[in-house]
Length: 252
Picture 1 (cartoon, one colour):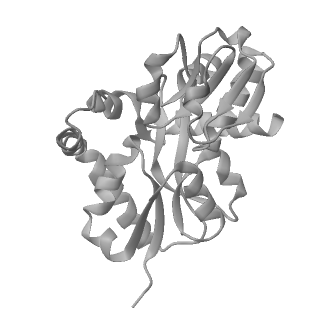
Picture 2 (cartoon, one colour; picture 1 turned 135 degrees about the horizontal axis):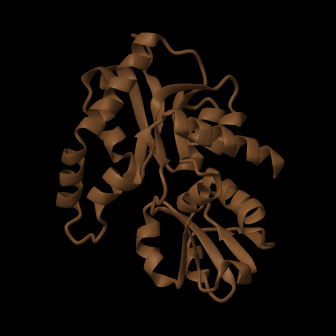
């Protein structure tokens, strides 16, 4: 029996359509083993050859030997994304320290690019640990990503959406994560994989309905988020944004 191809997928709201498609495709469940992780863990697993395919933060792609982007689907945004936020109680030019969310290194690097090249301010960066959200006070700001951004965004006077700020800076959309493999995978399997992702996106309303049923007391507007904030197509403009981001990374 042929071993299953191991996949690491991000366990955030923005990947719910992808997860739905992967878990509801018979061919995928036959040939692939799906694991759910935070973004940084997805990258580490692919880098360490613990999985064969990962939804990888763009900043981590360069760390993988012979990386192959195997899909025209991604986690991207054209303007506001709502889940990658710099939260502060003072304006940008008064921030002294920024606590960095440990979930995603791409978001950290995006923030550092904006701080240096767009806002042009000097701050101290501190790698944060669990519970750091409660330490955002005074001139200490915090980068918060993922689902926790929804519950923390209303607690602070200033909210800077990093995808929106990137768009203001570059006039290009931003790609947070792409589907990458660390080895050559047969075209038939890649086709199965992409068909499953497509299936998930075609059933976005079912995903939304399922989420609402399971989270009755949740105030997150999941319909708006999945339909209007996350952009799943890795198109020409997003590839340009991704290439510019990687280029800017080298300079910082």
